[in-house]
Length: 295
Image (cartoon, rainbow, N blue to C red; front, side):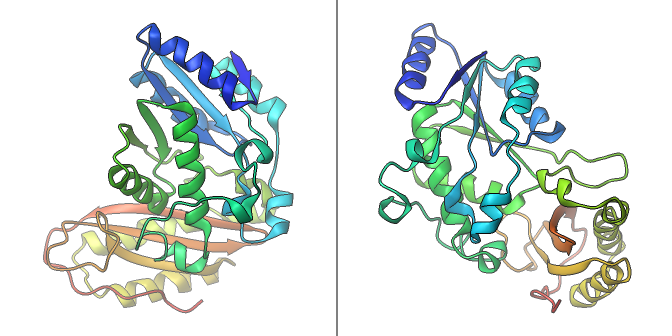
């Protein structure tokens, strides 16, 4: 496994691999790797000869300086995990490599609509930061394929749209969410949970599955379902953040044309903000969906 900090050396190696006819898959990460990330690596290996992983905690997508400062950085352990998975190249740029002119003078990429709605409305500028750093990484790595987790559902939709709009010749592959044995979606932020909070955290996934069962059972009073779901979260000690039922393709409000809906839920538990989602097949015409409910 080769590790690179500088863009020029990474590009030189990738050019050499391309001259050999190698197909390249890319997995962008912010480090603090868990089995969810390694599942992305394994999926990437299925689609290419060479797997490239980046580790970069992107300051452009953090709203609060404290969140950026406190984000767990475990580079040595991450590299050991990637090496055990047979990763070929790892790119670990510094902020100075990624943003040599500083964030204030950095050209940015923004996907209209998807950047400002739902999670984007709650976290202004977050998706601008995601789209910008992924575009830069795509330009640096020049992959044929890139793998992203479905846990960050809106992010995946945004990156697919960005890749299409910018005519990038890259296949975006969504990889199903990897869960703990009790159903909790794996996330680097789960490390913020105390022992007691960790025991309560799976309530989010259970509540989401309850919402799904109500929808599959034919209920279309989505606003009432969401109210009930948020009550369940509060009863377990979680603070509902935002809950939506949206068209799974457009992320717009569910309409009579919607064939698949997606449940998008988030909740605060101690210092951790938990997010999850689930796609539901609709078997009958849908009713208009409620917007975000009050926390």
